Image (cartoon, rainbow, N blue to C red; front, side, top):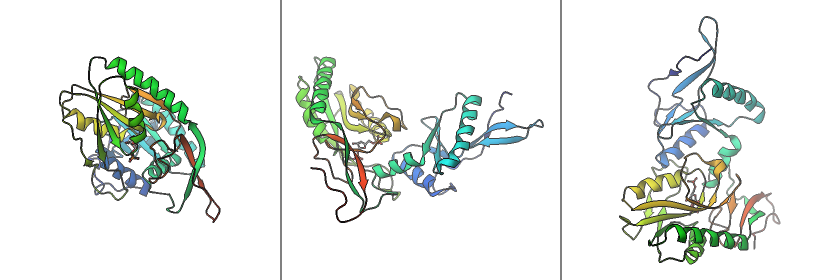
Length: 310
Ligand code: PRP
């Protein structure tokens, strides 16, 4: 059976005020998208999965969100694992019937991690965190940055790039990278606001660049690209200022968590879908001064529980 065109709910809600969310997590996710200026529609379409002989829809799937400019759907799964199986089956069926439609599934674990990144959600304020596993030692980082610097110097030969860092996570990386690019370079920094979970407006430039970037060869330097929402937003802003070129160098690429597809021209390391700290990266402003990059674990409460990494 070839599927009929999917049914559209019209008009689909596009604001938090209009959407009647089934779960709190959906509303929180919508706030996050709003913050980064990612346009969404809430449950805009129902995809029939199975019809009876009389054409009636027997089974259907309505993904939670459609991200308008990115052209994909997101389904949040905050259910217990046991209940996810049925959703998997529906998703498989949906992919068979509508191969051109992209649906990304965010599991409860993904969702909690997403909120943890912003220091909100299911995270206990008192929670103690400590280093679990070193992913990249100081010498591994140094070696890889040497390679990146060499590639950048080769690619920008004859030009004078402007390295633009996004504070604060980028501090260590910028300091080391610029010393490995054997070219005349300039540097500049920006600070943009982080999502705070209170639905307070959109991402803001807290501190802008001091340089005019029109006609310059700009290389954005990032410590980590996770969902890609920060970079996506930033690239649009900087592109509007008409640089001669705009490229990205990220030390860490957490590709598994990408929501917005952004092109990374230089990548230091790919990291697993774990919370990482050190070498500029923080958890609630801590751990930035570690010379290595590590995953963290939460320690049980108690007087002797959890020690700060040295
Ligand atoms: C980190 C990092 C990126 C952003 C990437 O910044 O420096 O700018 O997250 O995440 P995304 O791809 O999901 O948008 P953070 O907000 O933690 O601030 P910080 O640099 O001050 O630590």
